[in-house]
Every structure is written in structure tokens, then in C-alpha cells.
Image (cartoon, rainbow, N blue to C red; front, side, top):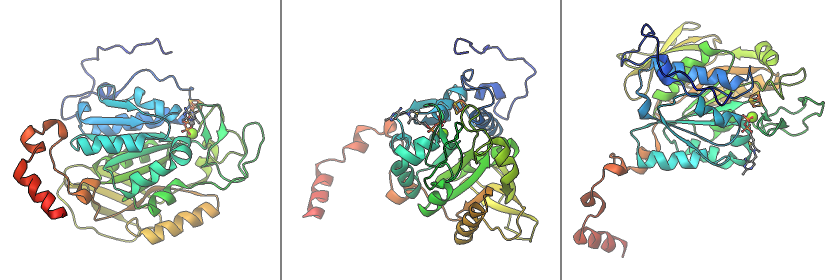
Length: 352
Ligand SMILES: Cc1ncc(C[n+]2csc(CCOP(=O)(O)OP(=O)(O)O)c2C)c(N)n1
Ligand code: SF4
Ligand SMILES: [Mg+2]
């Protein structure tokens, strides 16, 4: 498959978004993943989200680690900036890029092995520091690329393809993200594009660390009976707490918390709106303590809560925490970088 190049010519009648791009302009190379891999469906949702948000591809920087999941940025946004880092190191490379140029839209793509084992420290810190990014974790409970070993997100008691039982406790990445201070936390399923696409759009607009854990079955190594990350298991145990739609540019509407009805929540720095349909009357995504408790009690029953699980109303990003200079580094001139002998003397005097 790798030798197949996609044709560059587009059919003239393909629908265009507001800035004149077709959906094809947001695609990448032909995927080399196994047919039916959940990760390909996530790529499709990402393509759809960027197309619908009318984002120019060159404004996006996509970064990843190592794994089948981390290969996927090659299969979408082929006209965007890309950096395939070392295993588990996407968050620190992305943090550096973001500090150097906050004008790009940052998308981090990772796997459960990449984020919950070798990259666990990096994951925790990028969440707590509020780096303005959308962090997509393609969670299949195994190391797919290295042939199906249990990962740290595999549930205790779940069964491997060859029958071994996982004896270790699982790391729940959404609970960890909440604990670490992420200001947008969601879980979805690769088989539910209608839920995932608006979640991605809302995450992109969010000014801070937005985390989406997407259960993404590995058809080669973890899609059998006894696995808790298979298509069948997730379809049977998926408890969606809400459904949402996202609009990037609408006048803010007052939030209306009608029980069981539709709630409209301001989202993002540019006046975006999330329209949230509650499926669980007692689930309020602005209540972090309640979200943590409901996630834990669902997990105890073997259910997988999906939807927008937490959204902080007052989110800020790392640049606000550090009070950094707004212009990207590549636009700073010598006068910005070298404030002169007088200023240096003043700084030194302040340190004496
Ligand atoms: C430093 C380092 N250690 C180990 C590996 C071997 N390795 C490659 S991918 C991978 C795990 C991938 O699992 P995950 O992140 O869940 O991605 P998936 O393939 O399941 O999508 C490992 C351990 C590596 N490439 N580099
Ligand atoms: S091995 Fe698993 S994760 Fe990797 S491409 Fe195949 S199905 Fe997807
Ligand atoms: Mg994996």
C-alpha cells in the first residue's frame, strides 16, 4: 500500500468550505494501518473537524510519538506542519514549539503505550501546565505496533488474544487528566464519528490543554471476547453522558441548565458555542468533583462514560501563566531580543 500515491486532481464539484478548500485538502497519504483499525476512523474525524472549522492547513502543527497511533498524522492534514518525535516525547516537543510560536494550532496524537507508559510523566505535565493543544490519545489497550502486549490502560482481568489475563491495575487517562488540571476532558469511541467530530472541534477552540481519550480497537491484537477495548465491548458498554454540536463564531448565548434539555455553553476565545444535549440528567461537565466520581463509579460497573466529561469555564494556557511575549520567535528582531546595556544594568540591579 505504501507505494500508492493519492491523485492530486480533485473533482471540480467537490463541496468546498468557507475558505475554498475541499475535504481532500485535509487528507494525507494512503493509510498503511490494518483494515478496520480504529485509528483510521479517528483520522477521518480529524479531517472532517478541520474541514468544517475552515482552518487553513498550514496553520496546523501535528506532533506525535511512536506507535501505530503516532503514525497516523501521515494520513491526515498532509499540507500541515508535522513532527514525529521519539516514543513518549510528543508533549515536550510540542510545548517547545508552542512557546516559540503560539500562532499555530497544535494537535498532539499519541497512543496508550506512548502516553501511559514511557510518556506518562510528559502527559501529566503537559496537562497541568495548560499547553494550548488538542491531545488525542488513540487508546486500544495494547502496544499495537510491537504486536499486542498489554499496555498500562488495559483493564485488570481483561484477556489477551492468546489467553493471558492482565493482572495489573489500569491507568485511567481521563481521571489522570482531570487530576492533573486539564481544562477540557472528553472520552469518545472511534466507531462514533458523530460524537467524536464535534468534540474535536470544541477541543481545537479550547484555550488550554484539551484532552480526548478515544477508545480505538486494535483489530489485529485486541478485538476478541474477553477484551474490554474491542468493538463489541465498547458498543455494549458505551454510556454517553451528552452529545454536542460546536459553532466557532456565534454570539455567546446565556447558559441554560434545563434538566434533560439542551445547554448552550460558551467555548473558546473567539466566541464559539457548544450546544450540549444532556443524556444523563445528573451529569454537569462544569462540576469536576462530580465528573471524577461518576467516571469512577461507571468504571467500577464496567461501563465506559463518553462525551464531554469536563470543561473549565475559566481556562487559561501556559502563555498566560508565564506572561510571555505574544509575537512568534521568528518575528522578533534584534531590538526585541537585545534590550541594551541600560536595561541589562536595571535587571542586574534588581537581582543584587
Ligand atoms: C524508546 C523506545 N522504547 C520502545 C520502543 C518500542 N515501541 C514502539 S511502539 C511501542 C508501543 C506503541 O503502543 P501505543 O502507543 O499504544 O501505540 P499503538 O501501536 O497501540 O497505536 C513501543 C513500546 C520504541 N520505539 N522506542
Ligand atoms: S496492529 Fe492494531 S493498532 Fe496497529 S494498525 Fe493494526 S489494528 Fe491498528
Ligand atoms: Mg496502543
